Length: 490
Image 1 (cartoon, one colour):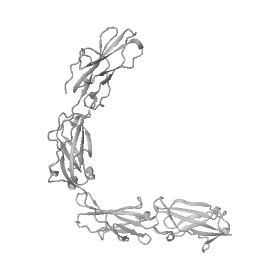
Image 2 (tube, one colour):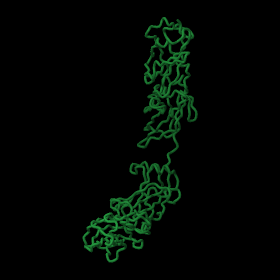
Image 3 (tube, helix red, strand yellow):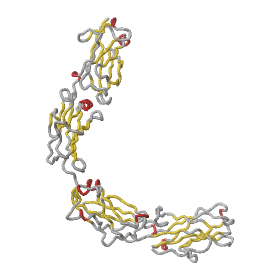
Image 4 (cartoon, helix red, strand yellow):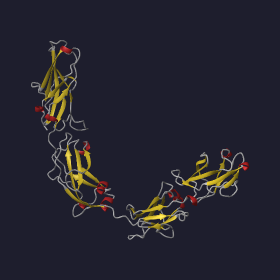
């Protein structure tokens, strides 16, 4: 670009003009840069109203726009007479003709010739930058990849996992002509070298200009775009928006997809299929279950196996970090991880990992284990000890103390103090009274009081019901227990 002319030595008493339509500033970048094609139309310049303007219509101030300090040849001027005095006019602007907007760095200011023929006043100058040329790439513009991955080599999972490579591939961009602050580089990784499938962008700052430019291809991006032959290219865009041609392509072979998952585990107490299983918790799981890991084809003494039982929430999940002492391929899952998964055919996903040397653990194919529900009739029936035995129970109103009488619920299978219980009453008149609502379960027998106040509304010789439901999963859902029927006698 050409250099600006030397500024005038006249005093600068007016504020600098405002240039419209320029590219937003960037630290260390060119001043007042015109955008791409901005030089094809006139450049508007605005300025402020000045002190002591022409006071009468027959007097006028003249404003001249000075380009590259050539005061003998203003590029534009306007006369402002005193018709609207003391109000400023609405057209305080001038335009630099498109014919003067040429490549290079230019100076711009405006000059005021006062109505009273006093000394001309000059504004502070501004710099205008016009860049019409697209960035020019190096003659050999291919990205420079590490020799280890270029043919006959390839990008492999082993290459990415090397600590020195930090799960990425770094390529160096050959220096190009007139590298500038604010240039933006976009790079691509694709099956056809079209410059469409972008990887990332990088806008150069002041500190980037003097150092080699290294473009990063993250392992995550490479894995997302699969194995096979891939082409790496880039483009450079300057701040004005001028765009380089697409660089020459570099061809890279990729083989980084993870190996097939290891064979799924099984559950000793379940009915196992291919990747699936069914557990009947009514008969199996009360003492926990055993996850069996298949013998690995590539096992070695230093391998570490761990099992993950991922069920419903934290209550239904478990991480077995060590096998049973008697069998290195069997992992115990405690009974506490079973009940939260008992419901409407909930599924537990079970997998194991194999870790060897310093590599990331490899995950197995999961086993999807369906946990069957337990029928309502298989849970405990709540009792009223004061009532006479029979179907239904017989409770005499006259025998019930004023404070009510006891209800008891014996311990049930999978009982745990993380569970919650609901107990409520209903009668033939559709009355309902809650006795326990989301009440923490007590290990062993759970107790509540049947209030006499409820019984006073039950007709003698009619039947009322005691209902129970228990949440095994922290209150998200409740399983129904058998309903107790009681006939109220006088």
